[in-house]
Amino acid sequence: MYFQAFYEYFKDDFSYLRKEGEQLPSCLTCEKPNTMENDTVVRRIPNVILKRVEKQNEKYNEEKNIYVTLTKLRDLFVNANTCTHEMLQCKEDAKYWNFILTYITKNNFTIAKSPWLLNELYFYRYLSCIYDFENSYYDFFVYEKNNSINCNRPIIEQICTCTKSLIDLYNVKEDKKIFYVFFYFSLWSNQFDLSWNPTKNKNVTIEHTKDEKNITNKTLKEKKFYFDTDDIDKLHNSFFLENILTNDIDDLHRDITAKVGKRLDIVLDNMGVELVTDLCLLLFLSRFFNEVTIHVKKFPLFVSDTMEKDVHYALDTLSNDEKFPNTAFMAKQWKQLVQEGTWKIREDIYWNLPLPYWIFPNNLLEDMQKSSFVFFKGDANYRRCLGDLHFNFWEPSKNVLSYFPFRVLALRCLKSPLCCGVSKDVVEELNRRNPDWSNYGEYAILQYFSPM
Image 1 (cartoon, one colour):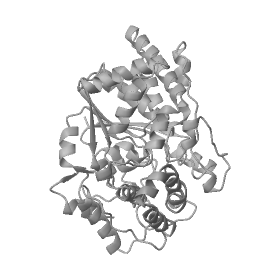
Image 2 (cartoon, rainbow, N blue to C red):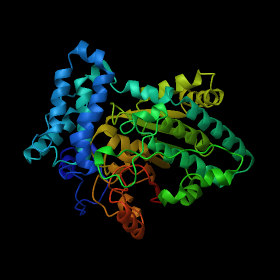
Image 3 (cartoon, one colour):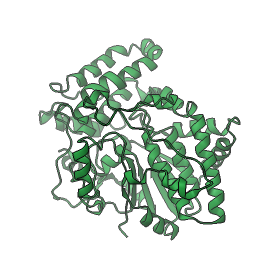
Image 4 (cartoon, one colour):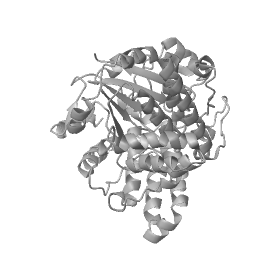
């Protein structure tokens, strides 16, 4: 485990939020066959995601003669059981990656025996180096990210129409179920993940059967949204509440509506439908907060992770399309809030580094401690909250997340075999039904921790 060594080396720049010397579980690695971790590294990354990159950037790849380097990257992951990581030719975060990769190689870890999250973030950072993103600003995922807006206009219009109606209703009567609905939209939209299902952009549903044994045939499960606001109880109950395994919405509602703070921070996940539901949530919550900071990735990551330019693309595109009037109405409000500085967008390389969130950069930590609530969206952010470690699924979330010095909300569809805060009886029953039940977005958590 390189976490402690990293902190010791960079302690002038980073804070360690857990108790030093605390005994922690082991981390998820990738050597075990027929697991999501192994399948991600030896199949999905080289044979699915990288092939899409090659196809969607074919002309650019030919012009820049990039294919040789892409093939080299593919070979590293296909042969993960024997290959070790190569050093990265990056600049802004070079000292961090050089330390981590040197530590890994000195300890003779192959890629397969290395931490899962490290391998994934390494792959995407390697890609950005191949495309010289720090100089070219060429986003090799831009085609899919833009399509996640452009090919989903009908459902985005439905979400915005529903949002407009719900805000009007809440202005008349502050029904807490309306409050809950905004969070449930944001929660379940985390299924719209381009690293898994690019076909979601084309309104095509791919769903494996529950008894599917071949891991290569499995993908995220999709749940349909309901948008009718005539019956708020029906709308509220449509959000698969039985599949939200930890739901702290009551405590969250109590603290937010008590107006205990002026600032809200959110660490975004996916571009597209999820971004739209997040912006709808932020607009609704603007009655409780004077300012919002939206945290985004510095470099392309996990295909659809949101960068600052993606937010601006969504705002500009959606606010100028009068074919979808309620979308344009909402997007103009979002855009105004950004332009006037009420909503601030902040990018940082930290969100692209393979570090647990208890090793936090001092400058970013100092800023985020000014916030009353920090929302972490999606599976990868949650994995970093847990350090990608093997905590028992039933370990109380307050024990795992108590290192945070601010209120934290995790909104996550489960897409990986780690979690905390779920009843042991529930975990055992789900394990009995299907050993990899936590991997494909069928279940979710809305997990809230307050140190106050």
